[in-house]
Amino acid sequence: MKVEVNTQALAEATAWTTRVIPSRPASPILSGVKLEAFNGVLQLSAFDYEISSRHHIEAGIDEPGTVIVLGKLLTDIVKSLPEEVTTLQTDDTRLTISSGKTSFILQLMPEQDYPDLPVVPPTLGTIDGQVFANAIAQASVAVAREENRPVLTGIHMQFTGEQVVLTATDRFRLSRATFNWSPQNPDIAVQTLVRGAYLKDIARSLNTAQDLTLDFAPDAPTLMGFENDGRSSTVQLIDGEFPTVDRLFADEYPIHAVIEKQLLLDAIRRVALVAERNAPIRMAFNGDEVSLSASGDEQSGHDVLPVDLDGNEIMVAFNPTYLVEGLSAIREPYVRMKMTDSLKAVEFNGQQEATGDESLAYRYLLVPMRSAE
Image (tube, rainbow, N blue to C red):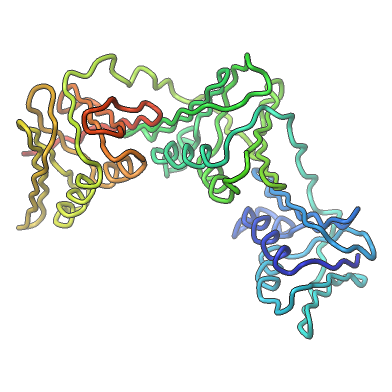
């Protein structure tokens, strides 16, 4: 193989492709990146049996070929190269990388040991890239961090006609994002469960100015593909049943409170400075005010904010980290808290105006903590 490529394009392609290579791969060959030169392009691929990534860039090809080299090392080398053009050339068991007067030699890895890349499923539909990235950021708030229940580390993706609903829960909270898309089949009704960490990584690496194409085969529901701006990823689906969570949303909430979101976030962060580890922040709603308080060893914090309260006075207590994470995912300037009593899950929604209606495009449920005060 002998190819000539733009150094910057190669650096971006290697960084994007090799990001899926684990720090401790199950097999040494999985630490490699596959380079294939053919028909005027250099294609880069990486795979760890659960997630794959593929990217291609234009290349001047003197000799086509396929090689595998250490992926992370190649990425580090390429981003350090000094000149605009880089040449990649193989010689027996080595790959020479040269740019100007700088050169590196990498040992080739055995091509026959590298696993076959998964076949990308057929197209399911397309989504605006920015809409998808925003929805993943919101839904992933409640993804479980522990691995003891794999289904809770995933985001449940439900496709019904032109609507997509993303849901995650770690048992203490639930986050749900809803948006519209363009399905290949307008009568589609399928659901998948994809590891939240993978979806977050894919969303972060998107070119949000371009649409995202989702690939999925309902008759072989083991894999999901994501294509955007010439880049392609596949992810192995989680094998398991996502819990039934729709019943957790109350049909009616007798108590509503509307607060300016940024004021609330700032107050929570201030008051939480004195809170002991895992101690709650208490929110007492009374008339047109909400009092926030927390305490630790011989210290306490207190703050008061204006609120538009509709319903009875109530006191609820929350894990401050969960509260901040859920509120931060709301994109509107006001937040509506909908409550039934001090121990039942509270729903948080955003709204554009203080006196307007809440948006149900993002719904965050948080179970209150028991408070001694």
